Image 1: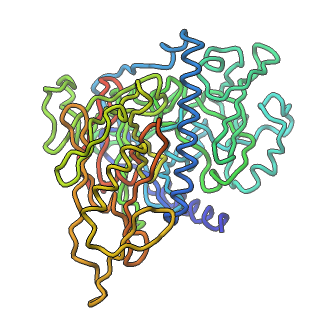
Image 2: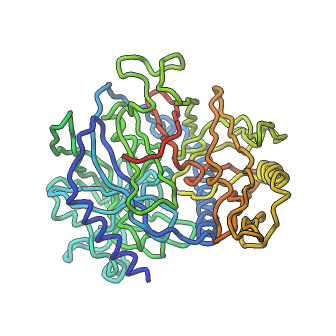
Image 3: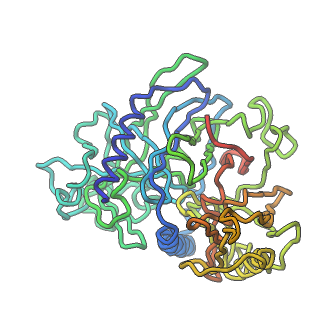
Length: 488
């Protein structure tokens, strides 16, 4: 089954690669979606993701306490002018997971790969095949990479790329910036090796270098390809686990001085944005990932991106919290949650990163996860409003409802209570009802939220983010968002 899903994805990716470029004036990635997973599977993957987030946060706090010299190096503030560029991509291939995908071209000559678009990753990596004659130790693994990569029809060959440059294990990038770099450094010039572990037991091993990504620049109707040089790239020569069967690797959108997002944003206006179509939308609907100012939510390029700068109608803005304790994730200040206009009684320390809480946006988590005190308050308020709808049991959710009329067999005409998230700066997110009271089975809806640990971070997942355009302005440290159908 996994092999058939992978082959379908590759055929759809190939179809995209022949589709050509758009004429927009910014760099754009269309996000690829495939067959939706079951809600139980999304719940399982999200629990693993939360454990991964907690582990990353713990390692970050430990590193900050023991190595204060690294703080400046892990908090880049990208430069960049007002000019915007376009990199057209695709969307719409099903995977059987809750993730979103992009087509990424790397190397010289360029090779296309299908990567997970992940705001929680700081290392971009692709499945890679080392030269047959190379010493396995020099590539950071003695694993049998032939069996590891046997299911992958595409693998990056660094020896075939004229622009590949290994990063030495003695470099600052390897020692201070690279997540999960290995301590072993046989000689100062040996390749920097990594062992990237995921909480579900999956792992990726290899070495890190830099290479060039091929992007499509456009202005008006004229388009041309060019190179984005110096992209930090992991060459994964061995991996295990099920997380990466449907993709060729990960595109890092996290906040880090080695992530693709920070590198590309520094060239394209200091910002990037994405818009996620409904996770149950037809396959031919598209969404996109953009690098450069997005005119739908950004102030005019000639004006400063401050709180008083004019924004398009419907656009909201809140400070983007780029705190070292939450790197590489993007945090926001959440002041509260309301249901049908009534602000819920949730302790403020739940939203305070200083007191073990906080809130992040994560493209790699599907269902929104609220720390225990917030979760209990929100589901209690929602379930009270839905008390007239018959309850049913459906694991793994706590609150599910039979939404089918016994008289007509049609959906009940029951209003779903309005949920709103209140951010700093008077910015309010009011997601569509289908993003939090979700279709779980024919005639059954569930409150699609998960209970998180306390103390612990709350995570706004991609289902709650759907049908909104989100711009991450790294240069000015602002998050902008607005409702959108996310199609073009």
